[in-house]
Image (cartoon, rainbow, N blue to C red):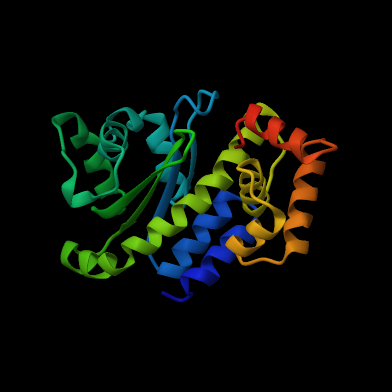
Length: 234
């Protein structure tokens, strides 16, 4: 890996979008492809899936044109189990063969790992990391990294929720830090408590909360929290 986990998390926090964030991860870990899905669930009211990927555009077009998502074994296992898994553990059914064959013909590789995260509101996301390496090499490389990917996914999840809501529900885009501070404030934590937990100065916490209030068009912190809750941000 070319960057420490802390440095990478900070880079993700500063990134402008989920698309940029997954590209940062792909570069840092030198994997071939990364795909992020914000899954459809009760916590999000929009109907179309929120997906960001580093797969080639030509494959994405073929995937969508052929509606491969309905027979994608990775997506089906996420929906059925809701837990992280290595692709060697995929339960492949006859209906999956077409998708798998097409992906192999496209040179996407058969080795991968899918990480699943569910937040406190029940909103679920999945991030798949895959490679063209042979299975033995892939497992040797990936096993020490599993905990790190599990740490990165919640950060990207928060970015995706606010980005998706901005696109489809008209809510403002808040940064991960703004959402973290707002959420902790909603739980009754003081400025100093938030600062200590996030490793920030109290002045910085106040600045994040002020920006969140401004974006949400609220004159008080209580109003901002209420709007964020009603809008699905928190």
